[in-house]
Amino acid sequence: MKQGIEDILERYYQGETTLAEEKQLRQFFQNDDIPEHLMSHSAQFRYFSQEQSQLPSSGFSEKLAVVLNRDKAPKVITLSGWIIRIAAGFALLIIGFAGGTFYNNIKAGLQNEIAESGTEPMSVLHMRKVLAFEQIPQTSASERIEAVNQSYDLARVDQDITGLLANVLNFDVNVNVRLAALQALLRFENEPGVRQTLIQSLSIQTDPNLQIRLIEALVAMKEKRAVEPMQQLVRNQDVMEVVRLKATEGLNSLDQQQKT
Picture 1 (cartoon, rainbow, N blue to C red):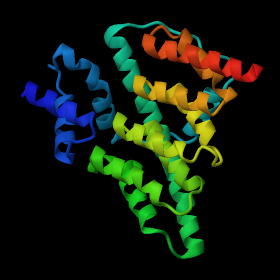
Picture 2 (cartoon, one colour; picture 1 turned 60 degrees about the vertical axis):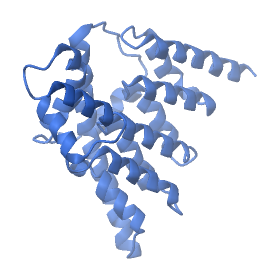
Picture 3 (cartoon, rainbow, N blue to C red; picture 1 turned 90 degrees about the vertical axis):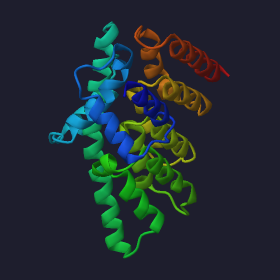
Picture 4 (cartoon, one colour; picture 1 turned 135 degrees about the horizontal axis):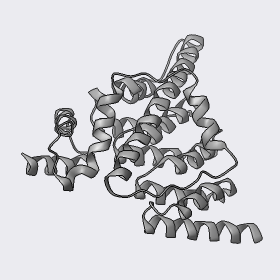
């Protein structure tokens, strides 16, 4: 059974699992006898099961925005082992709550647009259906990646679409879906709010691949507002060394860009 779970896990992180297999993973990680070498995966699966019975409090997203945009860098707390993993899962839970509220705002905006125009592209309808906050337990990672990739075919992109992609980037439980959303957003870097979304996401993401991709993208954009979150990564000893080195490299590049 455990070997089977490891095989499913490998395919899950490649975005190839079915809905039934992802349900099996969530059920497995609710048990108390999870092998130690699999404990690092348990937080994200337990978080999503717990989230389904809760709703974000009113005003939570505004409070989150205040925290993300505060001027003073947060105090770094050094943790280790299983405490870090639980903390990471709890952070994903909080972001998930905010993501649900954020998505509802996006949804309302799209509905207003439909009411005014009387029509909506089928690709947008499909994206909203698959990527909806409340639909994630009923969709597989591969389905959500396919929905994200439909943004490439849209003739017109506005803040409703980029906001939906931002929600997926910061909230989806599967790292490959989040990577797909990042790649889609990079095509729309000059759309209103997209760069700010990427900067804030750098403070939210805990996956090393996403952190590195965000650093590279923000440096390529010459985005000076990314300096503070990069400095936070460099100071945080709980962040993987390769990410801290990439953040240091990014800070040096931004500094050189400013001087030239």
